[in-house]
Amino acid sequence: MKFKAIIFDLDGVICATDEYHYRAWKQLAAFIGVSDFTRADSDLQRGISRMDSLEVILRKCKRTFSDEEKFALAEQKNQIYRSMLATMSERDLSKSVSSTLCVLRGRGAKLAIGSSSKNAKYILERLGLGAFFDAVVDGNMISRGKPDPEVFLKAAELLGLPPRECLVVEDAAAGIRAALAGGFQAAGLGEGAKCEGTTYRLSSFADLLAIVN
Image (tube, rainbow, N blue to C red):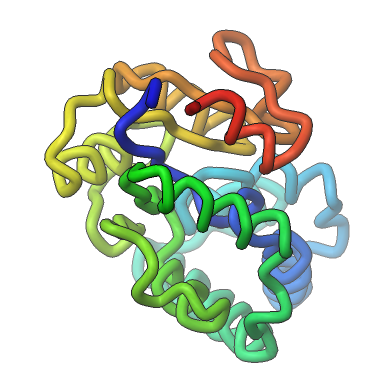
């Protein structure tokens, strides 16, 4: 195989949680008096940490917040978001993603998750993938969010492989930049496929099979 391992972002790659994020952030925005939080604002939050995502909203707010207040707001959003995630199940894992992952595993590839989300393990459990991946690195295990490459470098370390032997699959510009900064090749889905420097541009998740073979 061309790559010994594949490291996947979670949100927008393995599963679709963008709508949950949007609705939870919009509810928080309304709570602090920001009525014009839009889907364009939500797009700016793709691939970045929870605290950086909060700043996208706070830039629209007329008042300032202490660090303590910011952490409380971020936790409030997370509680809203997790209540929405509780409705997820194995039915939310697409057949294309499920079958592709199984084929890759059957070919001997190591598989990992590299996500900025602190809810990554919970989401994987809801999808029935709690014990599927060889390594899972999430926002609880890193100190720097994407576009810093820390999350992918840590995943490669847990797999026991150098970045050159791992392919990163991402759907966000911040994730593509993180992969390239870490010395990985990057496969882009959706917006990630449009990013400058993306090694492979995917039209579907199943396109991975032709790339790694």
